[in-house]
Image (cartoon, rainbow, N blue to C red; front, side):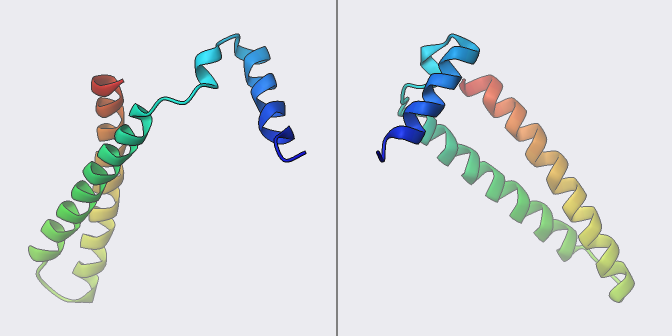
Length: 89
């Protein structure tokens, strides 16, 4: 009874795509996920630190710098995700 959901979903994935590779386990996916998480953590922390370190002024400028850091980080993470998937997969 406990294996029903996984077999049920596997059946629908296989029926929809016709690709058995979607169901099989690939150990490289764990390495790929760890590489991506370290790259994303580095990008977010370095961009935020850079924007915060060079911020001058008061509370208004800190708000502007944090907004710039978030938007720049999001763009960097999306770009890095695309390039890492292209290079490693």
